[in-house]
Image (cartoon, rainbow, N blue to C red; front, side, top):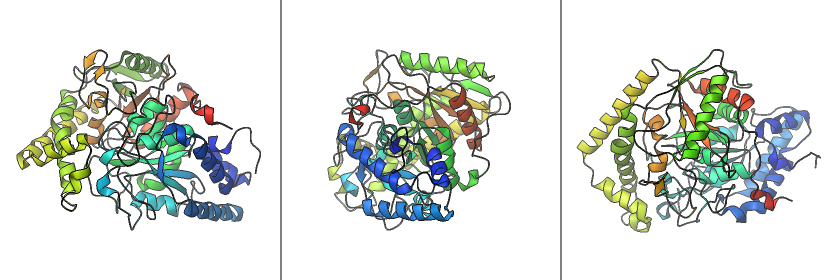
Length: 471
């Protein structure tokens, strides 16, 4: 095995591919190191990878090794280990969606982004844990149990991409493929110090997947420890973005950024607000024009009047495709949401769609005078891994979506959004922000992210608790 100053599982995708090209490393060596890391820390984190085909991954790594030796890699991602969230279909593995209702579901095809990864030579590590039907902001289910935050194992890594961020933050692969229907990439990234990208509507094509739970809202996107790795995987899964992403060009002019410190009267944890205030000032120091202003009322209206209807109706529609009695094993929260969804009328759904259209129009108005929107990614710091949500934020009682008020508007309006790490809290827990742009600004967001990473972001450090498992 090639000697390095640190374990191979710590290497990012960008560094791996460069080492493969030089002949310094083999994808087989890297897979063995990542698999060893999984064995070292898996028991500390609960459910992370919940389905694997090690023989298939071994074969993929060997095939990649042969291609690199011939000098014929398939892509800029050939030989890089990637995990896949368990609501994204991957042929050869079950896709259980965190629910007993799908416990026996084995897809016959890869969903289109997974097929692109496979055809690009990526090494598919396995499926990452999710909450039931990916509709909650923490990660636990009756099939596999909770996923724990690498920074504090008593806490949740968020959701619904909790297994994905736990994997990347702990070194079980440098990249994860995930979904974001209301913040499910951005909030978990904020809780684990990672970079995450929700593409704009349709930028990552989808086909051959699970039934659409949140039609038009949910996008597939990547999670990584740096911007270059996000760009590298997007070159494969987002053909519309196959321009000059590597290296990602920095913004060429000062950007006009609207800064939303809160959403309506919803509370925000003071440490989060403090750190994102600090980040706003750092963006000003980089030359950008950052102006704090209230979010449009349509954002809060979408959260309270549209999101519950769309998610409830979506769950009811998915369950209607299953045999009678499939809902018997649902957890209490999902059973309640299903009952609410089944009680909705066509008028209710039409009204929710009207709220969504109003949100889209309001965001178009915001972007007529601003290039981007900045906000916290989460309203609350992470909470107990066994609880679905925090009951209070900054001393104020909140409902199950109180922690998630900042993110769903980007899904409702089909906007690209990027999660970026801020300075951690005094207790060392990561804190994140998000930057949202108009349709078509995906590359611009990555450019700002590259500038932030180079000039202002905290330097990546491995979670101290996870280092208990290091060899």
